[in-house]
Length: 355
Image 1 (cartoon, helix red, strand yellow):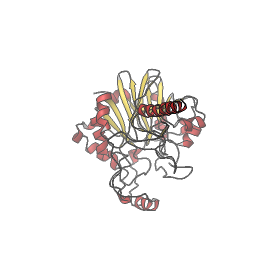
Image 2 (cartoon, rainbow, N blue to C red):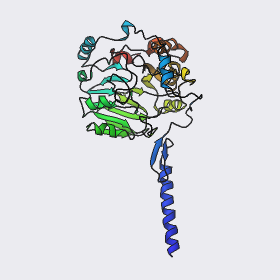
Image 3 (cartoon, helix red, strand yellow):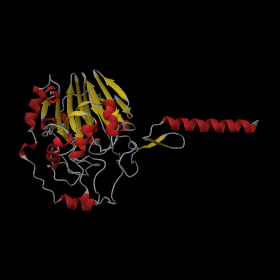
């Protein structure tokens, strides 16, 4: 009888652990107890190519050869940006603050994405310094209602910005296991999301979807937190904020499930690491790969970002927007439907989405 009870308990525990593991989707890596301990990219995603290894000295030496000349029209003066925010306050608009940081106003909701206002992207005072300031200062930011965070890399999750963020009651949507950074900084309304999860905010519907990327902030936390992209549905239109991502077959599936997308915001910079012995980045799209994703996901229009702010890779700093526009027709897009902003540029959303 005793042996029977022990066996029953063993099979019960084993079955529970197996059930827990079966309940977890592919991108969750679990321990023996069925708990998620890491995350991974969607099935079929590319794996790192080449045998390159990271060397700060090699990267910095290669970086010195870059032409850092910034075109005069790359940045809108701050006083004009502030006037335009006031001018557009009753309209739906998109404003590029720089890198992956946008203000997107939809009705009564003002969204900020991956807020980065620090002078450098790294821990404390370390990491690459931005060569272009944010379009506005953090204390000039209009009232936000919704914050979307894509992943935990320093150029997206900026701890100093979170610490000094003026609107701590902003509804903040973050990937799984990233909520702690917001709670530590006294944000009061934070929701962690898994891939394919949906939530509502006022008249918006937001879906968190996969991206081909990774996460890391220290030597011991590689892929311990999730990453991804956000689809924002508003008045029958869909805007996809996708940063960072590499190319993967998952986008064909996402296009079937969620397409068409009215406007795709996607990274077009930080792809060249050849000096490091890395043939290409699998975690940041080239401009051409960004256009391929736009095609796969059935985007009507596509706006490039993640360039023109800070040197994270070794392509010429003004190459991404040039290649992005030059290759539009190769992927079935009209020139006017492949968009580059100036830092600080603001556009009426109705104008952007018009046919």
